[in-house]
Length: 208
Image (cartoon, rainbow, N blue to C red; front, side, top):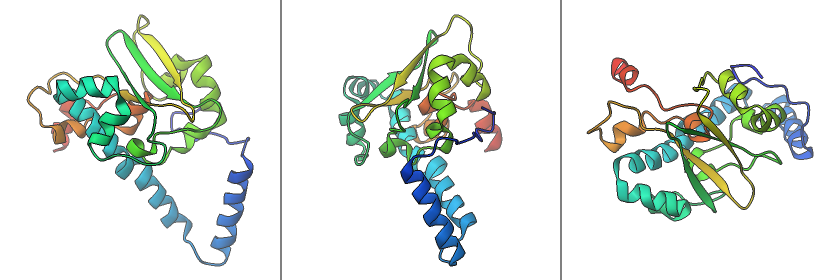
């Protein structure tokens, strides 16, 4: 599995094969433009969808009462912000700390909390990620550029149709007094799956 997350997909389901065949047919007939379709999917994967989750995390960082509600009943707390819908039921929030890092996978299929993260990335659905995340989580994290101290405990949570997980990443130091809107800018999709960390606030301020 390479760092750019471009994995081989040798095990395509019948539905995936049908989707590819349909996409090929529509492209040949000129009904869709593949680059435009790729851009649309990328937007929902990395921009529009994950912004919902980022708002949830930012509020949990800034509001202790909301944080308590999120950890106690994530589905209800997320719904407070208006984020409900498909694959948004039966949510559980797990929080990263200095001692523990959480990572989410779906070993049987690709269950994913669309309500807070949008469309699942291609690598999340790939067989290599689904198998290696359980067997070698530290190695997988390293390939995503996440290097953790040896003493950090890594917990891997297996999503199912009955329960889906949202990782609450550690709040970066130096963000005291930040608004929820500004805090949300530090939260990435990968940090809410556990394959990434929250952004460095100094880099965010440099880019501003």
